[in-house]
Image 1: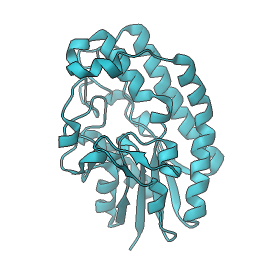
Image 2: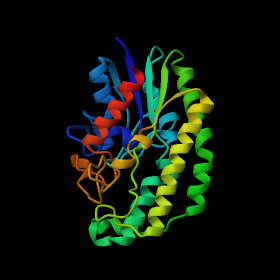
Image 3: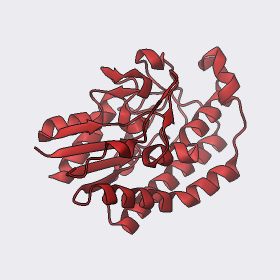
Length: 258
């Protein structure tokens, strides 16, 4: 049996995609790792978790909204793993947080009342820029750490589905200035992942490129819009892959592996 270990953040975990099997991590039984493993007949070890950063994958226990924490994801990497997929980096550069802050400024009434304390905070463009500049080396270091633990594993970086539409829509409330800012962060996150894959000799599945016509508010969106559910009860999170998005990324991964 081929052993497949899935690492990463919410864009791999699948918050809001039924059924949720680990609510504290927003992990779905129909996320792209689960769908790909099912189709390929692989034995899946899925430790993806919403909110995870590179450090949470590498070495730091990740605090959970419900209290407590989960171990560093790399602890689940068995030496005889055959395949490892990684989708991470967005939280390191405040990608989603910046998206939410920008949309909150355009439509505060569309968010839960308590969201203002978090989304109403300022955007630190300089900090985001510095984090993006450092990200390729951090991701390449993560690939090296995976290889040290599982020397024969095939390592595949799966980047983030494109979130930002070519123009604003009701599903994506945001000023044009902020839309351009967020689109730029998304493109730099995409480039950082590709650079890390090249520099570390990992494989790349570019979900970002294939999903450009399926951004928030498109005719066939692969992500949720400016909508909020009860995350701890399995509800949707704004600007995250929906069931169609997870199926599409699984299709890409299966095609790449085949």
